[in-house]
Amino acid sequence: MKNIITLIGKELHLYFISPIAYVVAMVFLSVSDFLFYNQIQHFSGLSMRMMQFQNSLPELNLHDAVFRPTLLNMGVILLLIVPLLTMRLFAEEKKGRTSELLMTSPINITEIVIGKFIAVMIVYLLLLLLSLHLPLMLSIVVEVSWPPLFASYLGLFLMGGVFLSMGLFASALTDNQMIAAVISFGILIGLWIMGATAHSVGESTLGIIANYLSISKHLDQFVKGLISTQSLTYFISMTALGLFLTHRVVESERWK
Image (cartoon, rainbow, N blue to C red; front, side, top):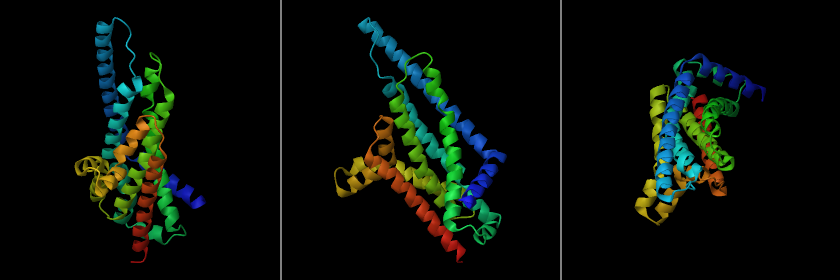
């Protein structure tokens, strides 16, 4: 455990002395705020039109009208920026030849993989926490339903586990950070668009498999405010798969 904590500290130090974490946070928050503002504008316009026709305050679901589309869009933004967080984790070690020192240190491979994963997960969690200013500001003027928001953020957190573990795997495959980012993005976009594949092939066996593998479908369950056992199993299993693949790649490097 001590080795893992030491490695986490080292990785977090590297994140926050470089501009990457700050640039990613700025892009994520700026785009999220813009999308949230657009949804609020749309919601306000819709409410005004309904009041004109009904002559009374319309009963609109704030979560479905504002937060659900915003949080799903946040999922897309995270898909695009997570590879930037993970691309350096192993690729930079290989490029700088420090991976040889890491592999010959007393730290075992499991501790290396887990330590790096937890470090980038902490950075990812900070991004999600920073985005909470959106519902907090809105709660000043309207009543916000917090239980579905909790489920939504839990979904984003679990989705991040999948994204980061797959990004870690991509970074372990190469010593080039840009190639690692492209591989990671390819894997993530593939998981995201599985839902569209499922619709195109219908109710066949392939369609059922594609539908289950669609990360957007499972995220949408959480964003609706539903904590599904099937979706929980999916996120945990896919995260474990990414970490297992990373472990196998790093282990193979040790014996070269």
